[in-house]
Length: 454
Image (cartoon, rainbow, N blue to C red; front, side, top):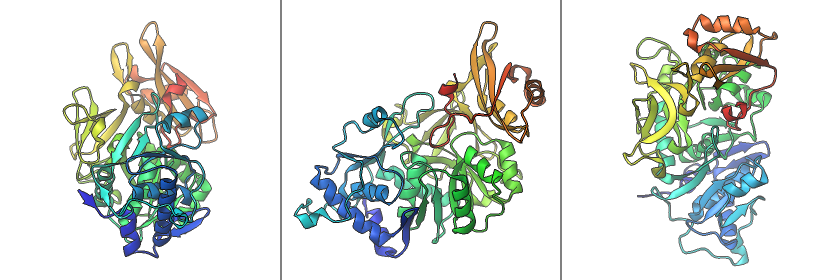
């Protein structure tokens, strides 16, 4: 099925609507379409055509958006590259690309210089079955792997998100996540599909993000637990225009949710991954302000997007299927094996227990690091925590915690162990606790890099 081109449709219906706001300035849909058309001609001049891969190694901003939409207009496959990666890492991600865009494309159409495109190349629309973008996973437990996402994956994801969160014609979605990862890139594409505005920051900066939420009419923002915590620490309270702070990227401690509710920040918990084109489950807008359908305040992400199916395997692994899932990522039975562990409550909402590969087996007992981390994070002297299993002659693996001190005081190891013992079975209580003032290693999208702590 072929649908009308998203950028062309937005520019025709809302030409003067601001498509993008960045530190370098803003850009309307009419202006972005003109830039993308010029960029498409330049890519064609450099040898790219429909189906060819184009690596985009640009920082978040107008130039990145121009190159991205130039690829989509041309029918080329965009491959975003993290500009913070090493030269070797960037070369690996961009391998096989016909063109690598490392400098902003010209704003002047190559057509002026006599470079033509196949007839109708910029007006063919989007084939929903065609690959639009290749994204690489964040590589928290292994190296990044490529995932081919189609136009259909992105369209269904945008529709499912809109059903869960509602749609404001004056939406202003703040993106502080990297555009080389699905969480950030999806904001750019959803906003184009909706014909609304994306505010794009090059990176998460607490003061700048706080200013945008307070003073620049932000209605939606995508966060991870760490960045939500930093905003609350900086004084985020009763944001006037904010409809929803979409928070995911890993387990979100209950203590952090309590702080957000005290500050009257509307948090929607979400769970997603690259292979499912971002969101899989999202707390609906209707459940954010008050209590869930069962009378409790939702502390789990869900239910699944309206077009998505979810089930829990016998070993606790989360399985996903539906039109947002990359076809090449599924098993023979059509289900995506996420590698994540979780449970579903009586209301159909998902509670994340962590990564399957991270599960600790100590003395024959299975232990979820995320469960122990959540308990530690609830202690007033703890800013963040990581839990992992380390080899142990007696237990096989010993539960070990690395704790970042917070609250202006360094917690005592015995104090933390006693705190855990009040909430956890004895075999889950860390046998060793290391207290540090250094932040935990994380990916650019905020996920804990547990492999760097081994």
